[in-house]
Length: 145
Image (tube, rainbow, N blue to C red; front, side, top):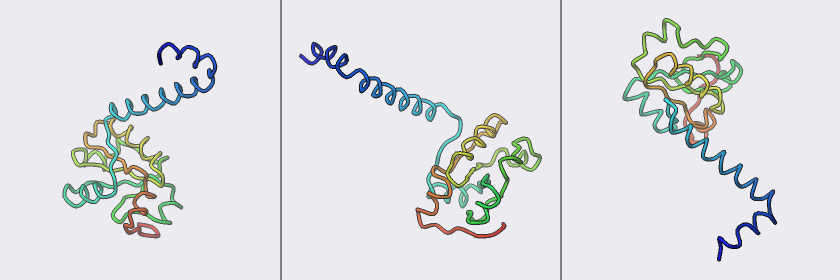
């Protein structure tokens, strides 16, 4: 019965069905990208575990003003315009876990892609960025590092 009425529904609600299919496609493609990318997103609790137990390097790619307004203790500030995965200092820690953060998480994802292309194996980004860290009531440092 349902399948018999489906063509009629689609023809009567073409725009609604088109929007539904577009949203479905976007969700599936986003999940596929999340599954196939070489870096992983982590939550604040996992970030503290990586830093404390595995001596992870924490890189903050926020702007200078954002970094000074609040950053995670121990993070190294590198502006996105200056970020170079081939840097000699970064090459020394290629085997360590590297966690990249920024204010919202978007710039960090871009930096993570560049790190994985440069051969870093353990690359993570803080999902939600500094905002998720602050939402978890974890401390932020102010000023320059």
